[in-house]
Length: 452
Image (cartoon, rainbow, N blue to C red):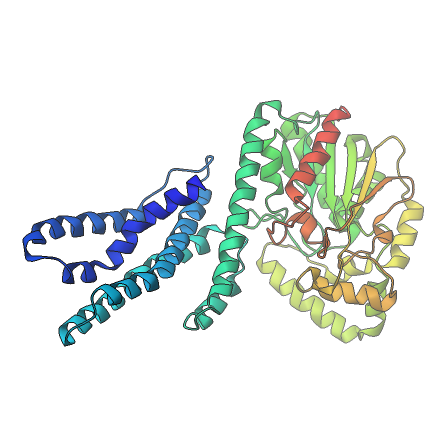
């Protein structure tokens, strides 16, 4: 209550600034000097509110920007809510007597609209730059309905609430990381090697793992990446992965690595362990959404799509990813190795190694609306093969499990679920009831507690 009152008091000078013309029109001749001083003070106050550079909030300039944007939106709503009451009061106390009075009143309304709208616009720009959880299309919707009273409040309210929720969520995370910083709960005995899945690379500008590595590093983890090409057969990807493992071991002087692998990366790792002699260098293997049992729907699609179409898609893919850094992309080789029939042979040849802790993690989407394309398409494909199939949008829950390995099936958050992309923070989205960054912190913390 005290905070709300303080905010209202801070917004009152902005409201008065928006009504400067009205104040000047109502002044007495003997108070002109006083009104000049008042005008200067209110103008400076408005500029400070609009342009003040706030200190970092909990060490984050981005959170400070969100806080500033939210404050400007609140001030705008306050001014727009009080202005009609103020206008009614003025008309009651001093009804316009001539055209000059009416012109002053109309001019004041225009002045108010321009400067209050400028404040709102600047606040939305601040939120647009800093609040990453607000989807871009909400700003488009607000632009389209801005001139419709009441209706325009709906997208504005959504933008405000989403940004506010992000502010408190991220502020709490920063404070938590600061509290446990010295504990280094993710400082494992062996370095962490994060292995990506198919159709992606470990690019520096767009991290495959989103905000996860930074969260782990803040808590003491030593992170490295698989760096294999985006799409190749399991055998070819494993060769590159094995070379990267040796490189990391040489850089760090470590005896072994804790491997966290997503999607096809888990199969690449298992092949490297069995066929390329890398098992001796693996302290633990955690797979996230890895199709250990393959994807039946992928097999059905390959059977139905003509070979000429498959080759055309593969050629287009190769052309694009060669430009992005791949030396020998093999779209079809990667996809064929993910079929159920191939994975059945793979599992028979490469069973779980009992001396190495294996942990398989599976998730599921609740509905087709739980994730954007192409994950909703994969979800439908899985349902076409098996109407009762539970999947993360690409990999069925059953397919992500491996005989002889520990398996964790994450309960899907209410309404939404957890998709294949959510588990690598692909969309950088704060999911209600599931913090993917904190989930990985917990995973690595467990490895540390196991002495790994």
